[in-house]
Length: 295
Image (cartoon, rainbow, N blue to C red):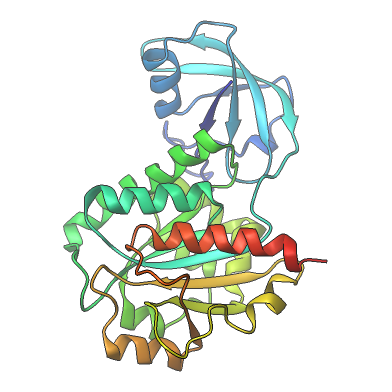
């Protein structure tokens, strides 16, 4: 069955067509108005018929099997058939500080990181970075990258999309760690996922990370695996932050700043990875190591 992200809103005073309730507040058998994007994609692009079944998930846990009930040129409704209490989130929390790269490389990094269960991606600019967004570009690019992550969730089966946080300079991010995730999400993400800030799963990012790792180029004397990694992965729900620089690498000053706030260098293998490859390899490695050290 086709899967669709159902974007909700916490603003109950807003009665516009873009305000949709949490699915968990509706009883099984209730009729739910589909969002404009779902109605367009399911009914018009995929040419669904009345009675077709699909899956809706809103990021608050589990998902719902629904049956298409009505459809018109711009609107559609579906009936909630059953709730599937299956949380496919990764067994660890991961937040990537990722320096923005150009075009399809950035889309690839976000798409594949989502498939590998990343919890959040903080977009960064750096001294050697290729991309520095103008203020007028941020909203549009943020919406695009968030939609890339959502589409990856719909395809791979995840039902909690990662939040993509608006760009910061790497120095600002390292100097001012986020301490209020609800404020950070509501003010720094695309509106399509802002409501998720109140969910316990995303609020866990408010806590300090158990381990902070900077993906680095191979260098003599560095351990292949940081000593603390095995211990952290053995925890019940480890939280790891990853810092990934641009194609030209982080500057010496940025590396020193990262180390001063607790980032440990981590080199994976003997080759220099591209910026879009590094998050994929890092997340895959963490998932491969997790069952080997978990209790």
